[in-house]
Length: 489
RNA sequence: GGCCCCUUGGAGAAGCGGCUGAACUCACCAGCCUUUCACGCUGGCAUUCAGGGGUUCGAAUCCCCUAGGGGUCACCA
Image (cartoon, rainbow, N blue to C red; front, side, top):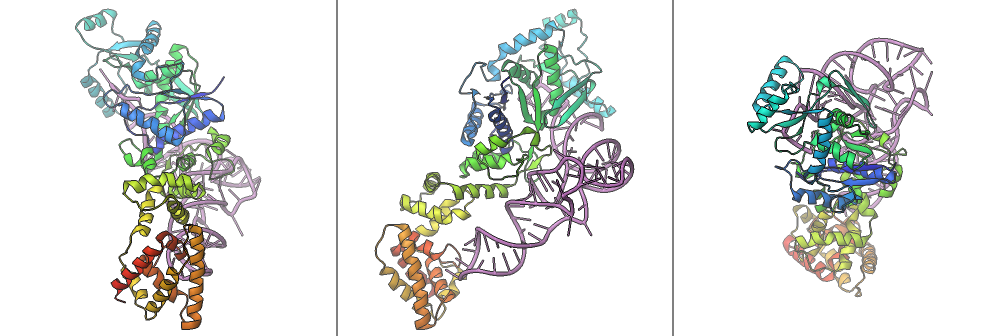
């Protein structure tokens, strides 16, 4: 039997890292087993669901490179893939439950239920539905229906039964049926509830493995009961632990700052995000850290997924992203950086310049959103001399150094090639240092620091032979003049 | 409150009864390299696996209890 898995989000918010990781595990599992991955939408919460979020989730998945074989947008043999469009199917299966005597109408009001719950809690009991409407006679039901009351439909949970299932990740899990309580499968508006609709979807779509977040573990006995009542064969379950935010709390959809979209917008590489998520709660046998999608697919194994919840560590993501930035092709990086530069209206540079900049700064880049800040450092014609850069500019020997440097710099032969210019500068700097040492007894820090300070207005930054090609000679000269003025030398 | 799940360093983790004197990665700290910052390199960072009992010649690994965290008990999913 071919493996078939699914991701079934409710489109009530953006996809966050935790949800995306659940998808990843599904996707990897499908790919590993040459299976099928389905994307559908659980939009029965009409109040909060919206197509906007459905699109957002699909976009996030596409961005991460997790394609789905069947479902939303791509269609397939088991559609429709939106629960609100599957109402007929749910009703069909409902009639089977009626026939088997597994369901009943319930007319209890929210107020009554609330009161029951409070009383049960006060008694220290499990606050499950009392079963008040379970034994209504057909005549009583008819009477209430005639009166225009809109009932919900509840599932009759068998008494005194142990509900056991094997969880791929957690092992055997068991529940007592009396702790479950008759649950609602159709709301009074005729819309099915989650616990019922998922089961019907999973049955009709032929899902073989349900890999989902641990918060659904306690829902599983209800779903198991429905499978049994319908006489359908059970899929395998695997409940993955949740991802907690930095403060140790569960990620929620309201927290947009953990969304996949945010990382896309900040210029993280999807491959890095995928790699990072894979390692959150899973590790390959050989403990490799940097893994491509192909590597992950080859190595993925559900049995190595951790049971305990993981905390999202942004620092490690940054490190991971940096690893990918270092290994990326400069053209790809440049393409990714352009929108960020445009967003800040940064212009006046060539493609080659950008690529050279990226080559120079990539080692310290966590994400592409940082590129404009680096670019700005080199694009301004003058700089504000920072306090810490003032002393080197005011050293006694600085004017001499700067004069000599400028003379040599302006005498440099023309070139449009950044690497060539870099080499020229390297030679120039070395020679300058050597000459000034023998001629004036000035060397090392005494020559490099003033040049750096005048050029950049700070005492730290890239190597000068990288900085200068980026600046260009004209700008370098302008900056030195301006900085000298600011320092009064 | 009942029920279910989880518990190895600041974070991700390896570990599956003796090869662990608890790998590895991020972060952090120190030193080296260096004209500066960063990179890089080297070293440090759990006398111990939430705590306590047990089983065993031997336990982070198996069992029990306690504590802590999370989830759920919705006409949300």
